[in-house]
Amino acid sequence: MTEFAPLLSPAADWLDVTYSPDDNPADLLSDFLVAHDFVPLTGLHDNMVTYRHVDKLTLAFDSGVLQVSTKYRAYRISASGAVLATLRSLGAFEQYLTVLASSPYRVTRLDAALDVYTDAAKVLKRLDKQYPQSVPLSRQRSLPTKMLISRRLDGARSGTWYAGHRTRARVTARVYDKTLELLDRTGIPSPEHITRYEFTFREGVANLNDAYNPASLFYAHCSSVVTPPSDAPSWSPSDVPAWVSQPVEVLPYEALLRRVSNSSDLEGMLELADRMGAEGRNALMHLLAKRLRVDIKGQHFKAA
Image (cartoon, rainbow, N blue to C red; front, side, top):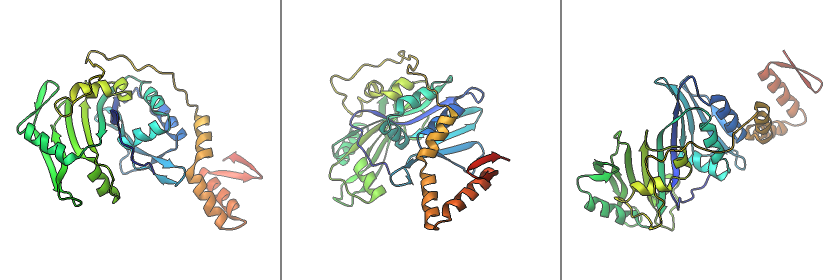
């Protein structure tokens, strides 16, 4: 499973990209994901496919999900922060963005996050006192809200502070106790206090370059919540260049070869077959042939 790694510089923590239903990178995306050990899962909805990454060491799913859906006359690719972290750890994030840019697109949501080693309880108390009625974000002001509890370890009031929560504002923010969230999710206390600052940018604000390196976008909007560094890069809403990277070509056979070679599912099936004894692998071959509707003749497969 992917372990938590603090985001010590602003990084993309969610990314939604939307296309026309008739012009989208569906095939290229599928080949790319399969080649990087993402498994498509069937769901309850015909218009949605969910992909999850398999950790090859544990043969377990990582925590993040990537969803591909077609609804409201739009084709949407939505990747959670855990999926983006996995792609970065695989060295495949830039290639993923290039896949997304292979058809005309709109970035409809980008979350950019930063982790700071500080006590969130003190940060949330300051924000609550500083902005009792409204918070200036971008060219608008947003209503602040909060959800706090008493921490079990020290009794301090902590949790999450929001600006523009559950609104369609183009820029919203939340600041929360990451240490507390990790404790609730994993049951393991962290030796460090971690505060997460997270901004959500809706359609018309960000582009794929911002997803790749969101520091300038983040710091341009964060000053009301957290002080940007003196050397923070500048950002302008007019700076919207096209994403430039090497073109991606993932051949279907190459994707299939890599999937078979690296498949944790196949490793699991082989393990079960070997536990059956000498005939286990023959049984596995028979079941695979039956699933593929082919006949086995010697060591060759013949299409039915």
